[in-house]
Image (tube, rainbow over all chains, first blue to last red; front, side, top):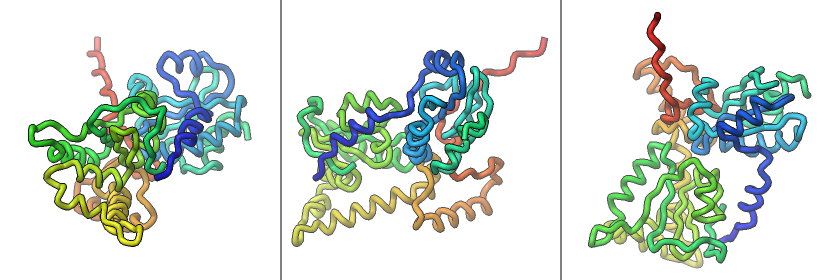
Length: 124
Length: 194
């Protein structure tokens, strides 16, 4: 039997993506400035699980140039409905509170995801 | 994450093991219902507390700080009363041990030959295979099938497409449609025209 307590607590504290509820979404995304990416996801979606480490890597790469947030569509049904989310993962890019780009189910590799979240802003 | 030993920081557990299952996966739901049916003692009390994983990582961490929601969704987790966590095939073996109707076969998984548990290894392999082929059974939230299983999944989906009703939605390999998981809020009806 292997004990891996330290690994799971580390992964929890290393989260480079902030989870948002509806109020947080309003404050950080709709009232936010500059490029922002939001992943609409669900923990039960295995595609989102495959995307998670890649998105963490991209969030660390971009840092404060483009914060990445996470919205759980299984909890935030109103947000999912407002943004007409058809499935997960869906990445929506915002600028000054307005949607400027969207990527549904991108390939879970760093280059593709980085391209998807930065293309609307010409950041790369 | 491998099976985890008892841990001092884990909160005190109830006397009944807790089996966490993926409520979005039809295969897992059927398994969970089967466990609910067989895992009870002579007085009819459940010997295993079967619970859906849910969508809140913090709720899971309150159960045990070692639980990572992504890992729990990836494999079955059984939280034991002594604070240990059994995962995947080990969890299945323990569920069988605690199900009076299945105890006749559960002893096999403890048999050791030269420090190897051959039947447990077979069960672990069976778990991996079932886990990999879940998309064949219509599990939209289970992700992309493993490489070895892709020809079988393709074959089943092609047969279904040819013989069943026509699907209107385009196939997207890295995308879980919300309609398939029930995580979609019905839109309010349009207001009547003035």
